[in-house]
Length: 385
Image (tube, rainbow, N blue to C red; front, side, top):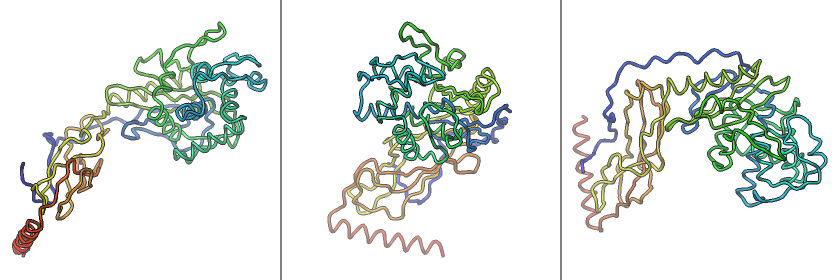
């Protein structure tokens, strides 16, 4: 192995520095707010008023679905459970799955009614089944919002009725959607279904973007007079998953066009690349007092980075090791950091870990190592004078 004695090593992943890429501004859109988020790296590519409070309308049901999916995952309920439909659920207005009071319907079907048909009746039925009442379910929703760090979100109902104390933001909804995709992939698969038939009534998914772009696999529409036309959409191409949230569009068609333009902007001018695979050796560091002179280093997770496409040509990695790395070293110990730089700025940092263990030498070996280290330290100090 190559000996590494320096504290900071600069390498370049075989990429030569070029002029900084030119990226056009995000498209100008007729919206109250929006955000475009790359989900795997949590990178905000474009945003406008993304922290402003908005009325989420039926986008609220993304949280309703999140709560239900988590209840299924923990075993509190199952997809095969039969839910007794209450009169309140049956009478709920707005978009409907067309369930009937007194009937028993599976959780699986009700979830499809929520996700695909945006059924307010199905949402209330599931809220009552999960928490005993819609009010109790709303408490669950707000607890999950707090747990997910959605600091600009508060719910008053499960379906998205307008209320001054029922609000969210484009940014919070994007992060909620990211959590839904990451935590409940099986549930999320329902969001790309284009239609659902219940009681011989066939309804199409209200997210018409599914027909315009086959890389789009969700997520949820919303519309009320106060909210305007809203849409959370998500698409994946190669290693890049984008989530777009648009709010306050003046028409159904314009919310689709705005969402498409944001997604195309992200995919056209930006890219997400895996820079390092988890537990792969990327460098080594000198070890004092060990049975091996060096330890192999890597990262404890895959490292992805989102940048303007041309900026990947400028990526450099700056390795920073701890002073005097001494054995014993256990696999997984943090012994430094890696910083990724592009165009002279740090764009990402991650801890460097030992991907192997190094045992300490015996007593006399450790004494000899300390003597050698002391002599080298004196020599180094002499050179610096």
